Structure formats: structure tokens, C-alpha cells
Amino acid sequence: MENSKKIKKLLMNAIYEVFEKMFFVFLEPVERNVKYDMVASLNFDGSIKGQITAYFTHGMIENMLKNMLGPQANSITDEMIEDCAKEAVNMMGGNLLHKFDAEKAFYLFIPFFEKKAGVFMKQEDASTEPAWKLFFESEKNLLGIKLNIITA
Amino acid sequence: MSLKILIVDDSKAIRSVIKKIVTISGYQIDQIREAVNGKDAMDILAQDRFNLIVTDLNMPEITGMELLNWLKNNETLKEIPVIIVSAAGNFSQKEEALKKGASCFVRKPSLPEEIRQAFYEVLGISGHGK
Image (cartoon, rainbow over all chains, first blue to last red; front, top):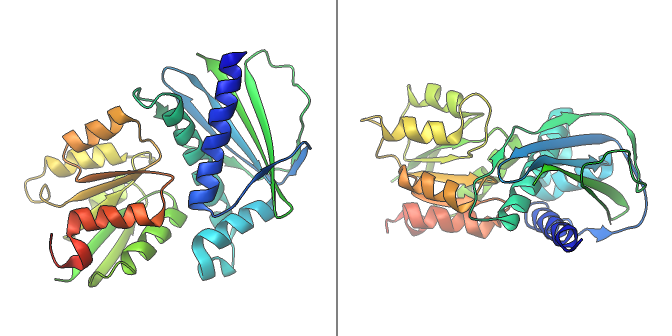
């Protein structure tokens, strides 16, 4: 239980740091489901093995791109959206693992992206693996994060 | 001295940000080229010479660490300074990269100031030497 709280805190800090430093987006935790437009995931391996998945609304990614690229983001393409989503989940995963254990080496796989809509819900799924779910809002745009740890 | 810089990252957004930071850092830039992974960088380096390489580590096909190995084992390219900018930045990876000859390691997420500082450390402030 204590370890679970610690991981949740590390995950939140890792997410805040990535969004504030790289995208100048200030996230606020919310208690609501996220109706998402796209998903980016990153698998990692090392002293802990698992997956981090980010559920983005189109508005969230658009805001991240505009803040990061400035005028270059005036005409946002599908390629830019995919690139931004994958890079964000890559940095969240890398940052989380660094915070979890900065001494140990972790292997980050290449992130993958799916342009699919759905609802990321707070209710528990059937999985028996430990999972953490977080929900955020920024300027009415939403983000959901799920962390699965397969082995610890 | 005019600088030729090669930026290697599979993320176009990150390449753009690094490009923007180096452009506004006061250096006289002759050319900035971009590569999408280590293999692409090797192809570019086979045809052209650069004063600095900035590379990510976690990339498809040929990783940044493999690129670094290749560079530092190449007689004609081993003197080119390499800055690593990567999300995969645990101490052991940082140590390995520096041991293999990287000049500087910046862990993402990073503020523009941290990347600029790496340029200053490697190239000297405003390109006028250390």
C-alpha cells in the first residue's frame, strides 16, 4: 500500500515535470473519465517491467504542440500529433523510471501510437496486474494516464 | 567560426526545439542538418563534416549509443563533440555515454536553458571558444 502510494506520487511528479518543462502545460488532477481521441504507449524493462499509456484529447495535443513549437504549429498535421504524443509518453516513462531508481538502468522501448477514440474510465478493469490511473485537465483539455507494472 | 551541427532524434518536434535553441544561442551557424535515427546520421556523416552532433539515445534502427560507439571508433569522426539529449537518462546510461566519449548529457524533460548550457559547455559561450 505504501509502495503503491509512492509510485503514484512519483508518477504524478514525473507527468507534471514533463508537461511543465517541455510543453508549458499546467495540469490539474480531476475526478472524471477521459473521452480520448488518441493513445500513446511505452513499454519498459529493467528492475521493474511494465507499460505507461497516455490517453489524449485532440485539444490537449494541439495545446502541447502550440506551446512547444510556437508559429510552426499553425498547421498541425497527423504526423506532428503522433510525434508529440509518442515523445510525451517516452519522456513520462523515462522520467518516472529515473525518479523510481536513478541508479539502475532501464530499457525504454520505442513508443507506439494509435489514433482511436474511447473512454478512459476510473472504474477498475479486470486486470490482476498492479495499475495506476490518473486523470488531468488543462484549459478544458483532458489527459488520462495508466501505468501497469508487470513485474517488480 | 561558423558551425555545422547535426541533430539526431526520431521526434521532429524535439529536433525543431533543439534547432531553435541553438539558433538563438548566439552562435554563427553555417548549417543545421537533421537525422531521424543513428543510421540516417551515419549516412549523412559519410558525406559531410560537422562541428557538433546532438543526439537522442532511444531511436529505431540504430540507437544513439550505437551511433556514439561508431563515431568514437572512427578515426576521422571521433573528435566531433557529441551532446546527448535523452529521456533514457539513468546514471548508468549517462555514465556509459560519457565513458564512451559523449561531451555532455542532458536528460529530458529539460528546460531550454539546460540545453543551451550544454552548448555553452561544449562550444564555449556564443561560439567564441571556452
